[in-house]
Image 1: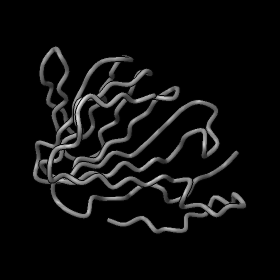
Image 2: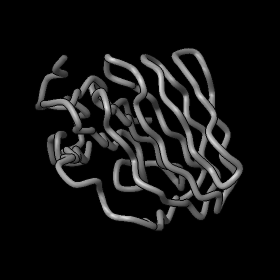
Image 3: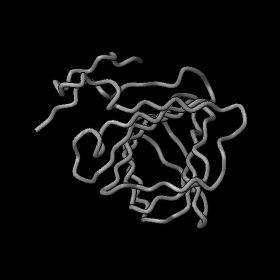
Length: 146
């Protein structure tokens, strides 16, 4: 067993930016599953994309909108989004506070990006593997920041 401590809690450094914080994946010791924290600042958008594996999104804070080819679906803290494999989708923060969600994939998501990032938007990516000591003590080197 491995405990990855204090890996959540990264927030975008500015508006129109977002964070992808990888917190569990095969590099960190899972067999196949992939989990990341996705935090969108007000107005930030995750461009159109799809995954080879199904995605389950647990919404922790904020409110947003998920676009699919079937239309737009609003969501908020406490909701769970179930996206079947290969469903084209885009996510956006529709609120005035950060939208924080945990994204679960039972297997390698093999994400296919269908459009580039929006102009002027930044993406801050954290790979949890980079924040742990090499000997695997599972102690976070970088503190959670809010």
